[in-house]
Length: 312
Length: 267
Image 1 (cartoon, rainbow over the protein chains, first blue to last red):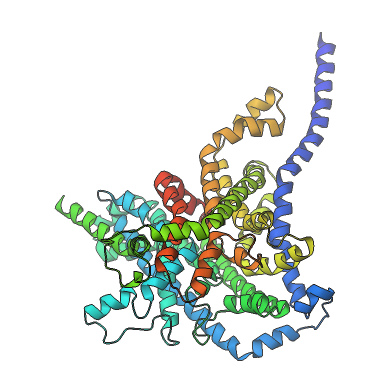
Image 2: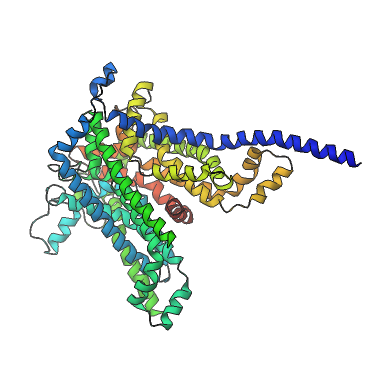
């Protein structure tokens, strides 16, 4: 009886060993499709862009298959282009302007909706609509609202005597960037509200009750209780904001196409034009690599910041 | 009580301001063609001529977008779900490597992917094709779906699957029979977002198609905008039709949408 049990145990261990090896294989198969997809959709493009940026990869390449190596020539060409510094400045203004307003307005609205009044939940979810609409749909709608002669915004402002002449929102180099930033702020507010609201909801009520005993109410409660507890969520929101905003393309192409007179060209729109309008893929790749490099710098700052926060 | 009602009123006003452009899109789509932009705040004489024209000119493109979006959902979920399960339940030092890779992938601009896929598609003949656009759109769907599904699957107790394993089911059988049904809600959330990402895609539609054969509706709207706009009602009607999935999802799947927005960003 005893020996019988022993052999059974040994036999079981053997099958378990065999099964273990089979199981490692199954485990690999669970992730294999995703690994292949990530390598094909992200790894390959990054490597390919690095290579293309070092090649004279143009329209000719598609016919002859020849793309001579040119070292860093694409980078020096795009960086010395007179449009480059404009595009850098526009990218910075677009990103900083969008994020600053989205965040401040988003935080204000999150604090407001956190007051929990009748219908607050419903109103908060309806607020998400601008964020869910296809960007090109939002662009088309705002194009009609901002139309110089007959758009509803100018007509309303004229009727209220706030302006004397119609503002050429999208047709004047001096205001187009402001208009584009304004539209992007509108699109980004819901995302900021939703994430910041979820951060607010996680702050325990007891903290406020305890604060009240110490006289921390209103603004003092915000600076001493809300903000310190919201900081990690806020930094995620800001980091994601930068990473998403810096590569925005749809909205600008839909609203102005980078015009008028290149007033709304950013690194992303420049990269698109170099590759798909001028068919200079080498230069387009060089510009988009500069874009990735800037994103990474922000991400590293963010990661170091959160690690320090964890260490504390 | 008075104060809370006042908050509701302010909340409704905020919403009216924020959603005014959406209302304006609807209003402009119902105006007669030609003089659309001089329209008043209400469509006092609504006409569906804009919609008729939109369906005539963009109906096929809407179907194209629908097929691409549905394909993206199927492919993204098929690839992302097992991976999300692995990242949530398997003990391995590769888990953190995988998560880092997904986070970094979010920093890659779409134009980089478009640059590379264009040259690859040109060679293998996937330009101007629906499968080509489905694969490209998975670059939005897969990482997001993995993050959403993983954050849900982290809460699954390992004992759940172990019980089935004792009964002799293999890892994959247990995954299909137990994990998938219980993850229904997060699968819906991930699927909805994959659908919306793909339906909204403009960049890949713009760069990976070179002639008229395959044209998603976002590209149709862009081409309307490219020339001097003559018929705003048709443009706005197409915009409304393209906004329908977002509106339907927001109303029908409210709780999933907010969960998705949060789950994808903060793990």
